[in-house]
Image (tube, rainbow over all chains, first blue to last red; front, side, top):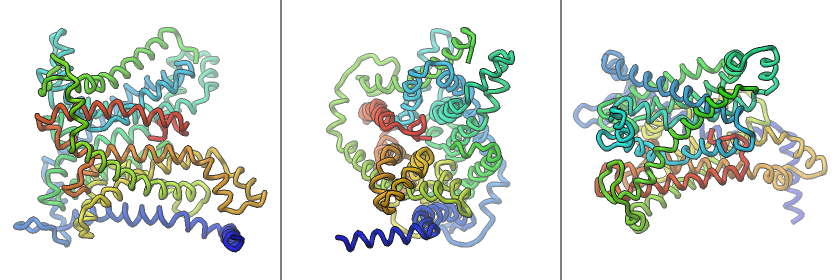
Length: 292
Length: 268
């Protein structure tokens, strides 16, 4: 008993004198996992995009060819596909900001403090409802003829959007809205009321205060939210399959090709990675990534 | 802030509009689970509770839930160990590559799901030649679940500072005693909140699961996805969907009780 206790104490003392050893012990597992499992998998994907496919058996052969990227870059259909995907992701991000920002502001600065937790819970709860269930719900919303939106709009002589790109944008906005509200809400909570009051004392009207004080200070939070809304939209294909009608996004092409021509699917999958890396580099300076 | 009555009213309207947008589709799912007709048409003409009693005898659903729990528990265990170790390393030490590592841990959720999914599938099947199994699913899930545990633990570590631990050491406790009596009890809430989130993320994941699971391994999202387009399964899918909507209150309640460090209970 005393033997093991003193052994523990000796080990503890030895560790205390060697901070590098302690750090090494803490890092070896998570860093090993991130590098040898995750980064290695991403590297495998990148490597595969240069591989060849046997034309008869569809078997992937290790090798080096630029043919997959050549196909992607020279076929104008994939430009359209990429532009449409980025356009959808951008629209979803803008919609999430437009809907989410006033909600976050109401939660953080307008409503009495005792209501805040309840409102946060109300906004967060749908995040825990299954992704598929929410897409399924929107299928019921936009369904032509018998959908909920058609039923709601019929008295006004209007029709619902039906399946297609509008339905995709609505559904993706719905799915990722909380990911935009929460970072903005957190940013607004960190914003000291004194700054806002000072602006008011100096004679600024509320609209001016929001424009000149609040918006510049919560800009990093909006960017943090946009990383989620943009990236999650960029890679989606299940929503498009369910409510998109004939619409296609990058993810659909990856999904359709990964069994028959994995190297080509991998080359397509590199497109959103490049877009996201460029996006992350651009927003890194705003300090938004510390808010993730 | 001193806002005019009109401005406050406008923000209130925006909030009400947002909450309506969020809850109408969920309400449709719940109401539709009582729809007597097998074919969806709004508004439902007749209501029944028959499908609700049927779902509990459904073997497919029960097995899918069990598989999801199994994957979730393994992935959460991976995520807890790795995320906690990483949070300690990054919050208590400064070293070369610290910034890059903090970016790397976010990458699995910052990159689109299909990229992570195809990357893991390619690595397992094409490069390593491993047979897909419940373990390949859990390893992939663990990778993106790690970040939520990490976020919760690092937020708690920052708030807690190192003074309680230093006091314990000054009073003669060694590293392990200090961890057992001081650090762990202070971290317990953050660990539970992180584990809850990690499990929730894994339980809900569809894209990564589709790409890394062999044909026999059917998690609940995969089961729903497979049965979504089968007309005679529609009523059961409706009830499962409604149960998932109602059950989403449980983790919210728990995470508010655990008093997480971020407003979303650490989901972000």
